Length: 281
Image (cartoon, rainbow, N blue to C red):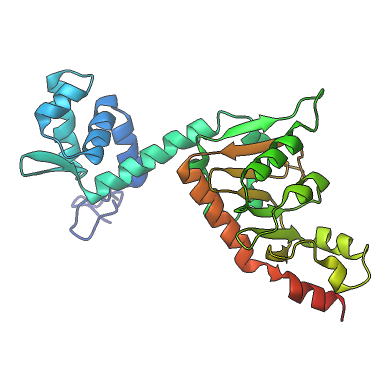
C-alpha cells in the first residue's frame, strides 16, 4: 500500500477488529520468554486465584508477579472474574501447547525416537505422542538379546483375559500367552497370516483361539494394551522390525493413547473369517 509521501509500506496482517494479528509463535514465545509469565499462566490454568495467592505460590518478587499478570491480561490470556485471575480460552490453549512442548522435550531425551520410524504411525497419533512422555524404553543387551521377548510375554501373561494386541511378526512366546477370551482381541499382520496358512490344509485348522476375536491387517507397528499398560514397538528408520527395544508406559494418558491406536487398527482390519474365506475360495 502507498503512504502519504508515496513510498511503499509493509502491509501488516490485521484481525477482524483491525488489530494486528498475534501469531501463535509470537504469543507462545512471549510467554516462554519470562518464567514468571509462564508460572502465572500455569497457576491460573490450574486454579482461579487472586493476585495475593499467586504472589505466595510463585518464586518471584511481588512486582514481578503483578507485572506478569498485567502483561498476560493485555495479551488476552488472563482476565479477572470476581476478584480472581482466570485463564481465558486463549490462555488455556497456550498453556496446553506449553505443556505439550515440555512433554515433547522429555520424550526426545531418549535416543529411541531418533532411531525409530514414527512415520509408521498414523498422523493423528504422532500428534499425540507427547502423551507417552512418561514412558520408559526397555532395551535388550548383547548378553541377553531375548530380554524384550520375555518382558512382553510376562506382561501379557500377567494381564489376564483383557489384552488387545497388534502384532507385525510371529513370535511363538507371544502366541503361547495370548489369552483365549472374548474380552481380548488380536490383529495379525497379513504376511504373518499368509505364512500360517501355508502350514495348514483347511480353514478349520486355522483357528488358534476359540473365543478371542482375530482380524488381519498390514500392521506396521506392534501394540499391546492392557488395563494397566501400553506396549509399543516401532520399526527402525530403515523399516526393520526391532525385537530388542520396547516402549512401555503405565500412566492413564498413555494407556488411553494405546487404546485409541488399537481401535484405529481394529476398525480397519479384516475379520479372520472373511480373510480365510477369501484365501480358500
